[in-house]
Image (cartoon, helix red, strand yellow):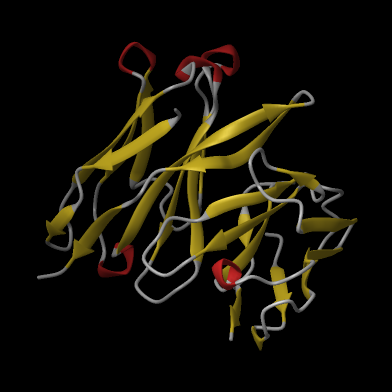
Length: 106
Length: 124
């Protein structure tokens, strides 16, 4: 199975900050990577697919990059509604696997 | 508007069975791969399985933790996805989400739209 790791596991940031979250795969997954945002008690929301493609309706302050084993999610200017937990997920091979999550709080 | 609505969750004893449903609307269900993801209380997300579409023979894939116990099926005439869960264990306690795949650039990218989830509790 492909193992996904994320760093940091949590971070504290302020409104307006630029935030970067890193996701690493244990094997080459090309660009078969997703990013999700989840708020407490809510379903996850898809932000990015294919490592860098923005889902429809997602604001352009979110961006994804990377290929192979190393990926990043960047929030260009953190807003109050962005405080949440962020997960990456690979879909290069079965079983699909998620990272453990990065909690972004104030 | 695209919608996915799960139902069928509840309390079940270890060893019991439960069938979850995911009713969809707002898109051509038969064209899309669909999947299930679960989240144990206070934990992260865990992929459960995937159903391909008719064009790909409705084939399925499962996580090792549920393989042989859970079965994903679909009824394109009802725009619905199902998760039959047998031989349930306490560790299957979780919120279960159904989610749709996005088809773009010739690839099925998982989980662009999610339902609200349904809670399954396995306990005696």
